Length: 252
Image (tube, rainbow, N blue to C red; front, side, top):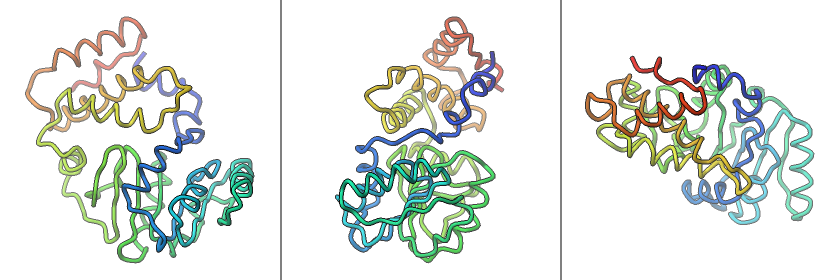
């Protein structure tokens, strides 16, 4: 089957990231990266079980922390975690598109749904100057990042516009062209950021992400060299032979 068909065969909540809970170490990496501190008002859009809200209050002493999620069970879990730690944060059960985020100085925003992203971009543009928006893996549309420590990306208000997708991706990867080594390194960083010790298929996910990164780079004309690297072809063959997942059709 084609890679797109394989992804569609997965449960929707896995593909969308709805049930992906970042480990505490990843929250700490993000908060250190953005230099979160006592003067910040931190918003976590899609806060899940509230671990990020708890850590921002307990370890980074933010002025205020607000978690927003449209899943009432997640909000209930988040409230329990704050209560267990004797912390006071604001937890709101609603769709983030309807939320007032105007007071935020730092926002964690990790969504893949294009409709949600496009709607939120209009809200982000109205935020006060200097507000930082952190995404994971994917950049905000048409924007150049302020700072990158992949897979974590900071955009800052006012946004810096990217002239092309090629310019945007090369800025994120910090290279002149994307090689197999670059694709593997960045795929591995992403896998480690979202994985927990219980997950046993890290390498499988890394291979898929590596192929996606390199093939997209090649189709955009920013891969290194004209030929398909031997390692890329080997992994394409492994995916086809052993897992019946086809990437060949993506090679334009």
